[in-house]
Image 1 (cartoon, helix red, strand yellow):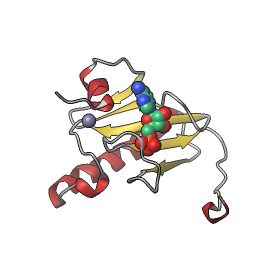
Image 2 (cartoon, rainbow, N blue to C red):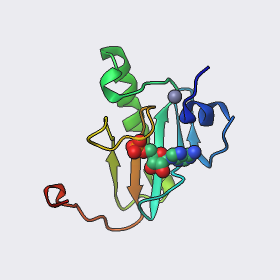
Image 3 (tube, rainbow, N blue to C red):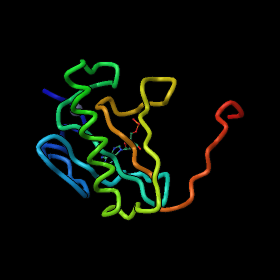
Length: 116
Ligand code: AMP
Ligand code: ZN
């Protein structure tokens, strides 16, 4: 039994606001947005971590990035956006199904994390 919350979203077992879908990926709204617009792009295939991907899988990731760039204007991000992947504990990853945060809809400051 796969207990992954994002796999359940992909399967439709957990509802989500879906902005984009193809055979490889979905884009949903983040349930707890940290920016005026905050989406999550995720591969349908379950990877726990970025570091779990093989060379072949990385090709998939390249297409996902290209798709994000293509649909960004439709997401209301024509003026710019930021992509973030949290990998592992130091980055505060909480959901262990690889996902890319897409944030924008406002001018984003760039925090100096050394001061945090
Ligand atoms: P991360 O810290 O990179 O693992 O980010 C996980 C993100 O998933 C957080 O921004 C959460 O707000 C978001 N999240 C968790 N559960 C859901 C859900 N059911 N639907 C949409 N976003 C979610
Ligand atoms: Zn999963």
